[in-house]
Image (cartoon, rainbow, N blue to C red; front, top):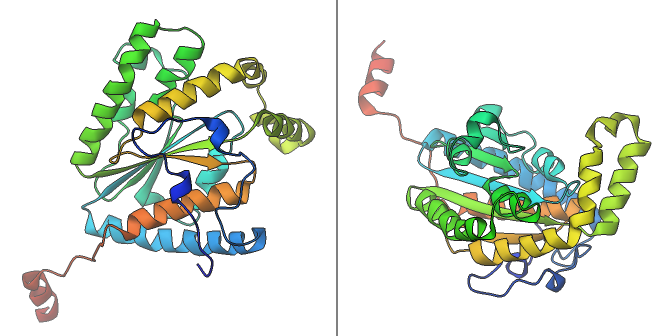
Length: 274
């Protein structure tokens, strides 16, 4: 990349106490460069991710699950667009998790997540995720505390199973502050092309900011593991958010040490003899 990125400071260590006050939403110091250099690095990383995803699809052995969580306007959609720009749509899929449908609500809370997990050779991105069941449902008292408290262990078991079956699980909490969220909501109101993104329901959730931060702290603390680590991503600066996520994804793909499949000798002989 030409400049270095200090990723370890954003990865949450298993067993550590999580205090969001230890991170600064406006921080961009983890990258040894300015915004312009960061944008160039992001473009380079996106091209490399595209090439590695094609290789992963061809090899058809590995799977990658990317979980994006964050308050409204934290930049989940923008991160998906910029980090995975140019990736072949045949090799990647985005799953959105809003309010459960009647069918989904009739099953256990992990059912809708499990049916969206990646196939071999595929990257799947969860835009929100199964973590809504320890965030929204906790904050709004939709289930009793004795129910949502059990879910941390259940989620860990679920993600460990995915990992043991060959899925790389990467989880990102896109962390913005309340003032930045207000600014982004105002930007949506000022720009007619973004009016469709504005929701008074989202705006009203600001009244529960402290409760959400407490829920995120506990969820990240209780469910960060070696098999499925959490990254707290300072997201007030979109370029830094996207670059951090892209670098973690890129490092993960490079760490798979993939190879293109060799042509079967018998098939090669048939082709040349024809």
